[in-house]
Image 1 (tube, rainbow, N blue to C red):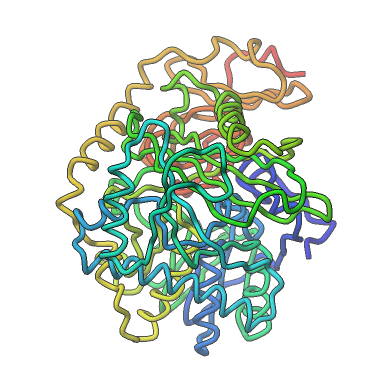
Image 2: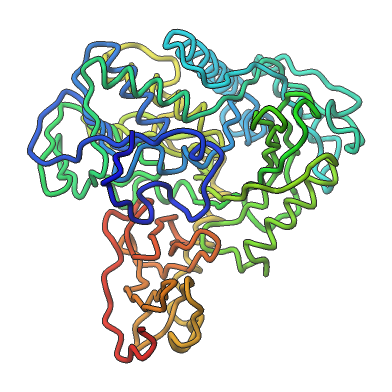
Length: 531
């Protein structure tokens, strides 16, 4: 339970301004902060589904485990998910077969199916009331897509061992004309209720959890956090974007922002199902942004219909001349056209997704590091990939054979992904041109209260924020990871790096790697706007 005497700063409860249905319906757990040097068998860094699943597996196996989180548990992307638990992946199986072959595509399907089974089994064994439900998923065509996409995916999923079925209509969406692909035995749940069950098991069976504990530096089998040393035989970095190296993974995956709305519908008005469209093939982005929908019980009168989409690369929303608010409006319009019983829109939030250039997560030993493991690159399927990460990394630490080891090897190079790699790398390189651009504002006097911007001053790029009382705060706008200029995210009130996805609160505090440190304070030459 979160003590009342804990003063929470932006980023400690969640990585954005908007809350989510999940965070509003549980008590985020607060644990002690690290205040001394410690030693353990395994150190897990990250209090989301990947880190908690790993700690759970290892505690069950009898290992001494410490888990650290720099905010409260679930304050990262796990608390901002829409919680589809699927083997129907964001990336098409037809593409996976082209890049990785049929046998590896079958292993991909098997691993995600096993993750669904793991969540179902754990929730049952721990008697966790997390609304776990098995249901069908339906993949239908984006307005700009063609039937060939579904035909190719029908063949590919069968080759991967998933018994999909082509239907001549989309169950639950009468307004959506045309065929769809039915994926059986998918699932959904309340992710944080589920994780609370795992956390309870960890803390009651010898595991140690520290919150408000920030990893600051790494060396072999030792991490410095809050100024103290944690020595461990094994270190697991489960921080969404790895924070233990500068380059190894960050050229092979790229950060995207995705948007979510939640609208009230009469209870039982729609059947329980998962729905996804195939994505926009005409997009400017390497990935094809798609729409995704599910239901969640809200109260006795209403369900919450949760819809997401309108993705763009992190820090680059202006590249399509669309504000975040316009993206929410587009998402609401799309959703209401298909679900006409929506009443009030009660939630809106956004989250960050890491997209590997070869469409598979990176899970396993960190390259050239015998004692460190990473779990990253969830590609929009964080609930299953986070669970796969816990299963696979715990097997590697315990010395157990696992059929997915080579498939998700973080050191792999996939030649068939070269085109996507070059396109994303080119986009990243272009972001360094921001040093030559004019600022968003010429002076802090142009800022409204509660907003931020990037400003040029004396040859420096400066991130400025004016709080609700009119006080102005300034930081270097140069990301401490690899030196890109951060951009102001008006929707979630954060400064976001368009190169590798590091994010910082309006107070300059780092809330998302790969950056390890905060934005450095900057002294403005003229602060006439402070009140």
